[in-house]
Every structure is written in C-alpha cells, then in structure tokens.
Length: 281
Length: 356
Image (spheres, each protein chain N blue to C red):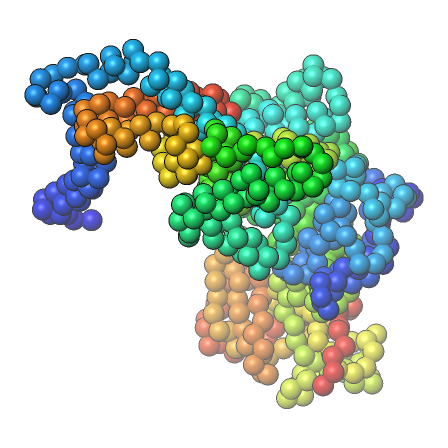
C-alpha cells in the first residue's frame, strides 16, 4: 500500500485528536483545577481537606463497599442468567426473548426504575406486605433510605451488563471442549468447574469491572434510594459543583474517587491475571 | 471373529426423516485398526459419535466387550476420542491437558506426572508440557490430542479425521506414526476418514460407508480388487467404468454402439458396468498377446505423474478411460489424437449389473 504523507498524517492525527478531545482533555481539566485555588495558586489543600475530614473518608469507603457488594451480587446472578441462556436454552427464539428481557430495562430511565423499587420496597410495598402476610416479620422492614436499598437498586440495574459480558464469553466456548471433557471422564459438574468456569472468567472479569465502575459513579439510583438520608461520592461531588460552586474541591473529590476505583480495579485484575495467563499465551 | 471388542447391532440414527445411520452391523476385533471410509454425510462420524456416547441411536445398540452401553454416558465409557479440531483445553498447559483423563480416574498425582511424561515422550513432545496449546503448531496440537487420549489406555480409541487439518507431507508422516503407535500400544483404533489413500495406508480393515450403510468391509486389498458395489469400486482407487452387454455365449459388446470386445465365458448375461483399473489396461502393439477384451480408442491427453504416465483415451461410445503406464518403454510413440487398441487381460472381470 502506498500512503502519501498527508494520509499518514490524517490516520495518526485524527484518532489521537479524538482520544485527546473526548478522554484526556476533560479529565485533564478536572485534574488540573483540583490543584489550584480560586485565586490561581497551586495548592494541595483540597486533597488535605479530603484526607483530614472523617465524613469524606467514610463516604468514599461506603461508596467502594456498596460498589464491591453490587459487583459481588451481580456476578453470580449475571452468570446464572447468562449460563442458562447460552448453555441450557435450545431454541433460538427463546434465547432472543431472554436477551430482550435482559436488555429491555436499559431502555427506560434509571429514575423510573428507582421509583419502581420504592413502590416495591416501601413500608406498604409488595415485599413488606408479602413478608408480613407470610408471618416472616411483625412490623415492616425498613429497606428504603439505606445502603441496602442502594445495593438492591444498583444490582438490579447493572445485572444486564454482567449478563451480556459473561454470555459473550460463554458463547465463545467451543462445544467440542465440553465433549472432550466428558470423553476424558469428566462428569457434568467437573466439566463445569474445570472447563466452563475457567473459560468464562474473562467475561466475569470484564463484567465485574464494568459493573464496579458504573456503581462507583452512579448518581440517580443512590439519590432516589437514599432519599436524602445518606450520601455516596457522586452526590457529594455534584453538591460541590452545583450547590457550592467549589470547582477545585469537587474536582479533587472526583479525582480521588477515580484514583481509588482505579486502584481497586487494578488489584482485582492483578489477582485475576494469574488465572488468565492462558488467554495471552 | 472371536469376541469382538466393539460391536454395533442394527444401529440406526435418524435426524428428522433422514437416516444418518441405517441399520449398521459391525464387529471390531481387539487390537484392530479399522477405518470408516466414505464421502461426507455418509454417516461415518455419526457412527463414531454413537460409539463415543455423544449421539444416542434411534434404535439398535453398541456393545463394548459384549456388554450393551446404551444409556452409559460418554464420561463413563472405556473409549476415548481424538476430535477433528483436537478440542484441546486452551486454559490448560499441554501437561494439564494430558493429565485431565487420569486425574478424573482418580490416579495418584505422582503417577499422573509419570504417565504424562511417558505419553508426551511417546508422541515426540517431551519438552512441551509447560506450553499452552495456542503456542503449538497444528501437528503438535494433534500429537497432544493423541497423548491426551492414549494416556487413559482406552479399550478403543476413536479418531475423527484427526489428520484432516495437516498439510500433505505432515499427514503422510503422521499416518505412519499413528500406525506405529497403534501397533506398539495394541489399542483398537477406529479411524474416520474420507481419504481412501489414508485408509489404505493405515487400516487393517476398511469399512466403506455410503448413505448411512456399510457398503463393504474388508482389507484394503479385498476392497480394491473385488469391490462389492459400484459405489465402492468408484470410491476406492481410480476406476474406469465401461458400460457393456454380455450375451448368452459370453460375448461382450459395448452397450452403446455394440462393438465386439471379446469373450468372458464365465460371466452371467445382461447389462453391466465393468470395472477396469488404470493399471489393468495397456496399449496393444502388433506383437502383443491377444487380450481378453480389446477396446478401440483415441488418445485424448497424457499426464506425467512422476512414477508413471497417465494416458487418457476416449472409447467409441465417448467414455474416457485412464491407462497407467509404469514401464518407460511402453510410453514411447503415443500421440494425442492417435487411434489405438487398448487391451484388458484377465478372466474375472468385476461386472456390476445396471438397469438400461
């Protein structure tokens, strides 16, 4: 192939420009603003403030815990649905309908779905009424306006991402490998544990990272589910930007959240790394 | 055959209305190398999968050492399979792949290690245990698949076109090596292939399959020399098939045109398609001995194929026949367009009755 200098220039410059405009620049602006006072002096005071204040540290911790728990809940549920759909369902039509059912909720707004959960989980909601009718509890359980409500809401919202990610990994498993396992004396459980599960791990890893990062930055669902009786990081950041107009501090909080989330994802990936050595062989 | 290790009785498998296997009976002896040979869609792979336990027969049964295995799942059958695409576990090293079977059978870890080393040595990959399958060439993957199967010392090893993906030279090499391994281990091999040469090179017996049925089963020589059907005659080796009519006196004439060819006193009468292998035909010179049958023909082309010259000639009815000339001296003085006489010597012609 013969490329003119101009073509080469375009081929390199356009992707780099897009990367810069959509990824590097916004982050860079936020990161930079966190290091300067309103007067334009360089300062680390915003970060000192975050480190010194118990409230910010506990909110950061709560956000991370919620996100980890959401990921831990979404993974098995997502795996179950994906496994059932890919490995068990035989009819193509049924498989498509299940995928549609999984994806359809993504078409509605998070707010609508969060309010749906309020109806379900409220004092006189279906869940409490059922529990009381069954005699499981005497008085209604307070689900709403707690971290538990946030976890329930986010898990529900993010399971589809896990399903799609794991399903694509399961879809990629050559069926003759399952037969080979069986041929070599592996029963159904052994085949699942030694062949299907390890081969689906790239999907679990990808799905977990997506769900975790989405959970860390989720705003609408926590806002509705907490109803003003608690905060996650995204709400504090929003507050700083919109209510207090304190851009440097809002930026510092956002960068702190991003950095810690990145560390968690990096650690998680590192642990997985050993199990996935084969995929890079 | 005394006590076949593997048998099929009336084995039938239907998909919808189509019979992939149609009432197949077969007995395979301990230590035998049997090739299932046929074109794609003939049912050879379905038969293999019925034996392996991956396909349930619609009716009939498979017996291993005389015991029916109907209802026994694949993982409990004393047979192993080398899959067409090898089906190596990509997330396991070569050694882990090979160890998979013995581990499932509960063999002690130390013994597994020893056996893995032996098996890899046997297939010529003693130093590749720590690699992943994707780091190996096709031929090496093939050997790993073989090692993974034979380490279990199965009663029968099923091979589903295992050499199909290899290049010609490697394939020929592996044919000899597989045969050597089979003789060394004494394991019964059932080998599926569509390559007749591969079957002839390796197998003790060949079962030629067509449309879900076994057309003929026998040694390569039996099948080549006395094919039981027109299909077998055409499928194995190169075949010239000439339409002839045999009259009451054994007088043989061309079916179209009625040219007199010669006499076959022992043949029954009627319309036939006659099999003449390219090496059974020769060009007649002025001092040739009188042949049993003599055909008039015109040379259309000749092709040099290394160890022989293949000459194609058109008979009076338009049928093109191939003549294989190995002898250097017989090759001279043959020109395209030349009128020649072709001779077939012998008594016992293979004649297949046809409707006309």
